[in-house]
Image (cartoon, rainbow, N blue to C red; front, top):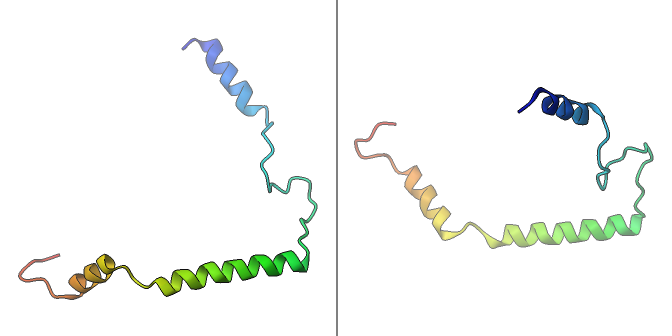
Amino acid sequence: MAKGDKDGMKDRKSAGSRSPVPGDNAGGTKPQLSPEIQGKIGQQLRKIYDDMVNQGVPDRFADLLSRLDKPNDGESR
């Protein structure tokens, strides 16, 4: 790589301009959600969480946990 190429990279990096990112609060204003929207989001999150909790532990994880709880036969850790 020629010296001029490296300098060009530095110039681009130090320019300080970046693409706007959705949700990036660069303007300093507080995003506002109505209480109705906040409630709906809360309901959906609780439903998803409850569904996940009710699924239980998969059999392969339960088997792994039970094997880990058993003492090792002559093996050292």
